Image 1 (cartoon, one colour):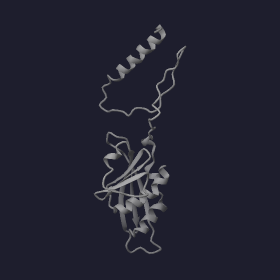
Image 2 (spheres, rainbow, N blue to C red):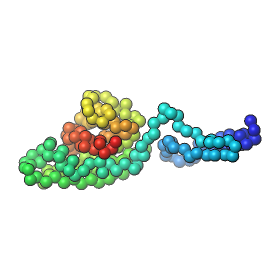
Image 3 (cartoon, rainbow, N blue to C red):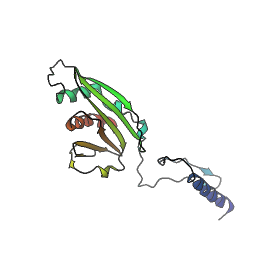
Image 4 (cartoon, rainbow, N blue to C red):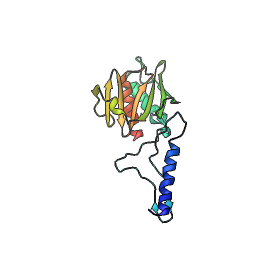
Length: 189
């Protein structure tokens, strides 16, 4: 092994060792992109992810509140008769409030409040990595929803590519939330 190549190997090993010595208590997700590094005479020395690796979506950049329009929320509320006394003149309004995640996994979420002139409901819909979706893939399969979806104990989770949608703090029926998912999924793809 020539001296230049040996130096590169030893330098890379030192960086790996130093990276493993950090004192942070939070683990960060590995980056799926790596900068290309050219060292004189050695060409590209960067490591690239294996061909079988799938790129992950930057969840922090997903605007979950922007996935549901006021018209789509109103159409869902009208279809489910949120205001039981609704008429053709009943007006539905949507308030969408971004939520901040506090868990160890990256999550983007939004609190949707839909009001139909006095009749209202709220749901928090979150988007996170579908890496562990198999843990939620039990119960009854819900056809024609995302790439795959399952309903268990009155709640439905949906996988769309490498993302998973789920609901919490929900005052709507699960069917109502599923119809909200149906309105949101095309904007997520």
